[in-house]
Image (cartoon, rainbow, N blue to C red; front, side, top):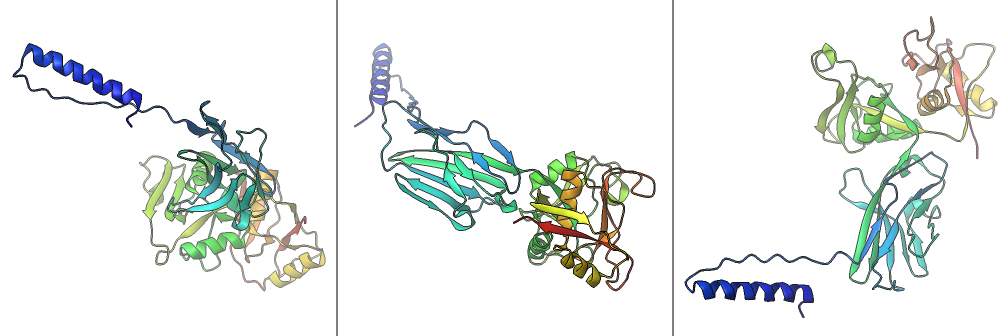
Length: 354
């Protein structure tokens, strides 16, 4: 059966056509029919499209069901949350609810539930946030033939840092890059995170992997070795690269940690192995690069003493530039990957809070 609106439109067109033919029987009529559908009787909306939180904390992703008054929510209404991957080629299941049946998936198991502050509230609460929780989430509501979706972004307070291992520059394929960031208490940064870091004055001339499989690098001061001095500032891109065959550095992202980062006061300088043991004797572990960057950027940690880190590099964080200690800028200063037998440096430790 045709909807009443469509029947009325067809009748009106038929009457108009008959009137024209009565004026001129030989007239050939060309008719275009425009059909206007009624608005959806069920939709979903979010009060905010981006939620910002921190690692270890909680976040509520908003999703509110809007339903025509002629509809009554059925017991078979399904609410489904999925996480969109960086390349948008698939969606990872997060949480599904239908009536009294609820299920969480994968690494979200036991950490997600619906807020349920009102009958039409489908907002998702995620607890104990991890670095991997960053990204875009889709809320989908299905009730019979009616459905609606909305996408909400979850952002984490954190810092982007360029990274390459002891092997040297341009030695990481994409999968090596993922492991390298993970080993340093970080994840591979997204384009949005790198772009935000560039807006914060990150300038780095070496290209690195991003989470979507592209290779890019941020330039705030154009110069000849970095694309040319007459080019504009921006995030330069090599585009998508072969994840197995191509080798670059990587841009990592890390966030607030739960624990204590500190420089270990020790009576003498240490070799790498001695540095590892010294932290263990203090009830801690030798700190990772990501933990140093988080302490420097997010907590303002400042120390002019070069110290060993877990990857065998030597670095020190300076948040207050001064003579003989990063005189021109606040930065994590990098002293390279020295011989691990050299007894020339202190050590930075990390003591986690369980």
